Amino acid sequence: MRHVRPYLSSTFGFLAVGIYLVMAIAAWAYYPAAFGPRGNWLSDLGNNFLNPDGALFYRLGGILGGSGLAGFFLTLDGRRWGERRIVRVLSVLVRTFGAIASASFILTGVFSEDLMPMHSWFSIANYAAFGTAIALTGMAGLFGAELPKPLTVLCFAAWGFDIVSSFNGQTRWLEWVVVGFLIAYVVGSSIAGSVSMRRIIPPRFW
Image 1 (cartoon, rainbow, N blue to C red):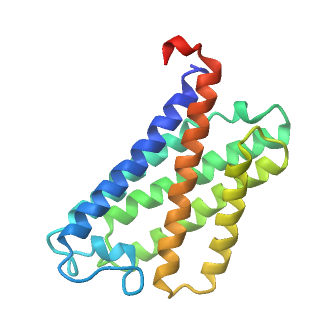
Image 2: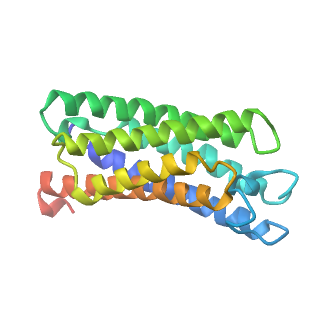
């Protein structure tokens, strides 16, 4: 099971990102007006009033993508980050905040943008918890976790941008960049997990 766990995490990560992107593109295809980062929140795609024919796609993207994200975080194998106690503790916290972010993401799909204030609550919880998980991953890298250096740099870049964007909460395009960082984190972590597995399992199995 220890050998399989990183593979599961990577698979869930790729699935979560793939499902979300496919569903977002489908919702965008049905959006009845011009749609872009300067004039829209991403959640507009799931608004039943603004996007009556395509909202369901985006909401399913949140529910199914969030479920995949939960699998990604819950199967992260912090033991492969290193033996230091602080690294182990940080890996547990990453999984904890990641699980909270995943549940919040699912609930943003259940409670769409036209169902306020619930959607707003869960969106804030999603970004806060996800940002915390990313920041803790970067900290683990600083404390000697066996993580790729580009992933650690990405974590701190995402963390810094998340802090800056929190002071400009009404700027729509900033949300798009934050989501881009979140996706990059999941993809980067999934790639790192896949590379780790190739080192563990003999090449003939790949």
